[in-house]
Image (cartoon, one colour):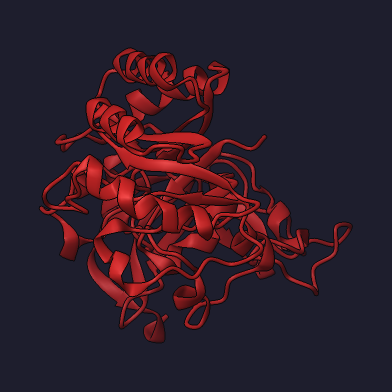
Amino acid sequence: MDSRGYDTVFLTHIVKEYYNVMIHCWYDWQQSPDHMHSHHHCPADVRAGYVPMVNGKHFDRGINISANAHYLLGFNDPDRRDQANLSASQAAVMWKELEANAVGKILVSPAVSSLDWLQQFMQQCHNCRVDHVAVHVFNCNAHEIMRILKQAWDRFEKPIWLTEFACPHTTSANDQLRLMREILPLLESAPYVYRYAWFASRWMKHLDGGNTVDISATLIKENTFGIEDLKKCKNQTDCWDGVRNYQTRNFKGGQMKIGHQVFFYHSNCKEPGIAGICKVVKESCVDYTQSASKDPHYDQSAKKDAPKWYMVDVKFERMLKKFIPLIKT
């Protein structure tokens, strides 16, 4: 059973992170990924990992779940006034309609932070079908999160989905990373944890301030990575995995070697150009994604015995006093 997943509202990042973070499932608080698929390329295997949810906040819009879905998530945050804001009795009345749309699927309970609310729901939803239980836990202590999950298992004795978790209200990425390193082995080894989903892989600047996870504590950055970010890495080259590049000039004279100086250029800005000088700190290696047919970086013209793409890891040396547009190089 593949348990690792995440929740997101940033559609352009789904495909990249599905492969790079090695997740197996994802959801976006919606009933269908069609709104994403119509605007963005979505490979079949990524689409297959989608888990629909009936968001109680928009219950009046009706329910339309794909026949191919294996799971159906219940209402999101019904116990919060700023979210679905449902009483346990209201949710119990609405649940029968979810059951009717979940024939042949695993039906997961409303996703809540309050186990007391969920217990009231279970008591008031007479003869209701609830196959699994979903909870949200925001805490920087891995063992406290696991204590709450174990409590949920002891109360309901149903497989647990941790559908949102993170270290909240921190501006430190190290706090977030520390939690992930501590809790992932615990989640993987807990027999009662069926799935878990990180909230959320990243936040955009225009959404900062309104979320549980601060943008400065996000572990996965936006699509941009500038030389200023590399400078902050200091001697920790593992904070950036390198750049994929076509080493045209290196095919005859050998690939980049440790100690070679290279330009760092900003490529996805309005006027691309060279921003600084870096040093190669690891031998270049073949980028295996070029021959993986399901990867978004797949290159049909690349061959395993004649690769075109390599990964190079570099360390910051200095910024240029003046940005040099590529048109001048």
